Image (cartoon, rainbow, N blue to C red):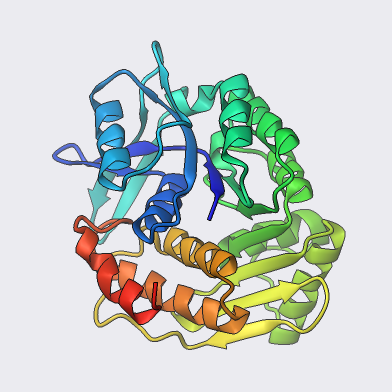
Amino acid sequence: MSAVIFGEALVDDFTTEQVVGGAPFNVARHLAAFLAQPLMITRVGADRNGALVLAEFERFALSRAGLQTDPMEETGRVIVERRGGGHRFAILPRQAYDFIDPYLAAQAAVEASPTLLYFGTLAQRHERSREALQQVLSACRAPRFLDVNLRPGQVDEAVVRASLEAADIVKINEEELQALLAWYLAIAPGTPLAAEEVHAACAALVERFSLDALLLTLGHRGSAYFPRAGEAIVTRDAPPPPYVIDTVGAGDAFAAIFLLGRERGWELHETLLRANEFAGAVCAIPGAVPRELSFYDKWALRWKL
């Protein structure tokens, strides 16, 4: 596999503990654990948190060809406050991943000769990294996978629209679907929709943005894949994990296994089932990525990797 993963690598700061994260970096680490050898394009600061990110590159044996170091800006950081049974997140502005160098990013992507490009929306909040992504997209003709990741106040509708127009396959969750329906089909959030109406709306989004497919994740209820041509593929009632610690990174885990299955030539319905189950397993561990690489062993064995 030769996937280029573009976007943020950051640190979730719990005050007493710093945990490396960022949706694209989560995807890259999962793929690397299954020996898929992706190229992660990101930017970190020359600081302690940058060293934590670098340590994860080394732990997962990820290539550093796309890793940039910013001499001025700090490594991306999200301040996490535990409140009651949940968390409050503050995504800090002006971080190193906002300033990915366009020339270096495009050069690394071309040298990787990718079979797939993955990108999200958060790393496009600043003009510099948006330009870097455009350079990467222009330089590589590989299929494009967009993982929509809407965070309040981070990117506007114009950025999301341009991303949808650039993508071939788009992954969203139910919250993100509501935002897209409001923006592009004038369906107000919270409007009750029957299953057939949801299918019709997703098909309309596929048509509007000339997508190859729209991938909708539904948590423990499964997922739905809406192709440009042919019938939708729906998986229902994914096996729940024995217990749930948190749902952080579940969508990233799903995306990683979907991409892995696509590259390995798995049958699509089987790929969705495996992605659902793996995402559920990530919900049974703290954080988005396991602390022990042995977590991946049973999956590699089960899937004959």
